[in-house]
Length: 237
Image 1 (cartoon, rainbow, N blue to C red):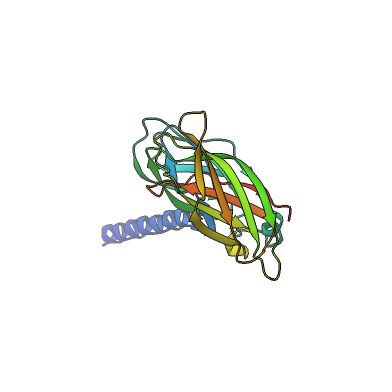
Image 2: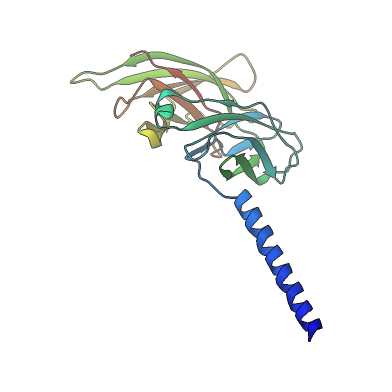
């Protein structure tokens, strides 16, 4: 009888230990939400900054991947604008480097914060476009009869030359969309070759539906739908 009692007591103790460990792990791995995460494609042999934003976390403590092979994280920084700060949002820009021989396919990205873990997904692809040198050549507020207009251009590098003659361009005006900004996808006006291989200058016209601020960000997509890094500037109306 005492043997049976000892066995039962031992089983109960094991069950309690299992519950304790499960609860402990569960608390450590509490999932929290991020409102913005982009881009979601990373190219082999490239370093692309990703941006993650939300108001459910106070800081990003570490970043890891599953599986981790072929990926590394650079030094990341807080990239917070005034609109986000007013609503207690944190925004981080985190450079991710992908090795030339990294396996293609989807990976989980795990962001550890003091409040819990954020889990997102990226996809490793052969390459993504890289943009730079944004120039805003016209910013017109509009009038009663003439709509507002922004004209701009930027450089785009694509090692496979598959941007096409009128690639999709993402335009964001004002704060990020979940803070009341405007985000529009439209075709480029024209693409001009430069003297450098695989590099073009992309010209665009954007007619905002409404004026929601001076912050302006752009990105581009190639014919596969792979999105570039994001660049931006302030508009002087």
